[in-house]
Length: 522
Ligand SMILES: Cc1cc2nc3c(=O)[nH]c(=O)nc-3n(C[C@H](O)[C@H](O)[C@H](O)COP(=O)(O)O)c2cc1C
Image: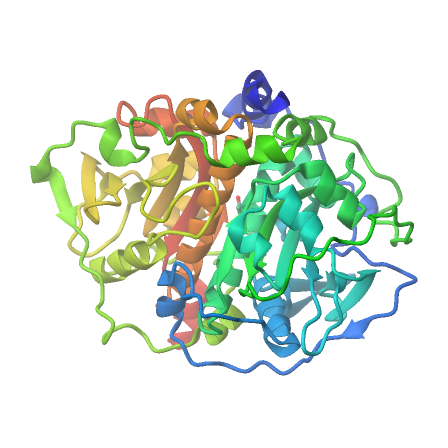
């Protein structure tokens, strides 16, 4: 089984690390004349316009973010209206900004380089107002395009090893990347970005599903080949990353699907030419699952004997634990998730002002209440540990910390002003030095790969980015700012060691007060 040849992950991960030296030695430049378009456009397929009006069930953003999964009712079949809203809030165009020579169409979820390489597909049975089929979602004209007519859900059910949420879902969303759209700028490191940028979309999708009372579950255990064939992906250029089961319709029988014939629909060229980065499809292939039996046993792998999580990796002194002090349900800001997603945008400049300990606590508390996935139970310790560099939080000493999820507390690792160090760790950018707090997600890849094989790499990257996506939203819900960042891998681990020794960095998020917002207010 390819998935068990763990050298593949280490070769990819180590080969795409950033270091001071690797950045200086890299001769890559941005070929603006060859920049790919940020959309997959099926030129010859008729658009099926989606309803444009956005309703709001009026759930507060912080409640929506904290909802691990909507409670299942007997039958929950989303309408086209609610599907359109969930697609808009996760991958739709929310802002347009002109720039010399064009316009940037910003999306609901943050994305590395605003390059938007993730597409969403819908696989559904007959819905009240949409016939069964396989559809592609086009954010550029907010429309679906039908790739296949008929009920193909059984293909995904089988590919997922009859994962119960998928098997009972009236609608399944499949997320897939077209690598070149991101690799144009980030080269081979773009495979990490597949999961980073999928995770922020999924955080939004989960938060959009909660107020609509639509059960949602992320599934990453599936036969890759079967999913790629269903969507007719070009596996050298594209990869299916995740499935999301939406709704619950056990009464709909699992009909055998029609045969999955090859498709030959034209898509618009992305750019004049494309450059291959073979490490990307190679890593995807190495972490692929090949049969239903393999998927089932992958999912039911015996949980690690030693639980994952920060608490397990140190002999922390109880006296150094600082309990979170989050806002209660009555005190949280009342802005709805729809309002927060629509005003979200990554902070380009932070003010260096303090945020309150309550704001930080609320963020961490609401963002880390678990995500519904097929690779971890909600009550299992997550794959990533959260390490913080605190620059400016009222009533909290500046320094480095690790978050204890179980006890909802921060442990001080080292006191000090680390703005300069944080700026360096975040690739020498100003954002990580000027924000109030940097949150690093670190994972013990040895243990994760031992349990999940190479696919554990996908799981660790995705888990980090879904939680980071939730923190992004929790910041904006409190009128704070946030930005994802990239980093010098080994230097981050060294900075948090010995506590973090042996762990690998999966994600970095800066949080604080946005300079632009402050200017607007004053
Ligand atoms: C995982 C991740 C990493 C990012 N890294 C950086 C970074 O290193 N520097 C930066 O200025 N912005 C970074 N960003 C912010 C993106 O540039 C931003 O999300 C994108 O331009 C889209 O804008 P928006 O988030 O305002 O919608 C990152 C975003 C994500 C999701």
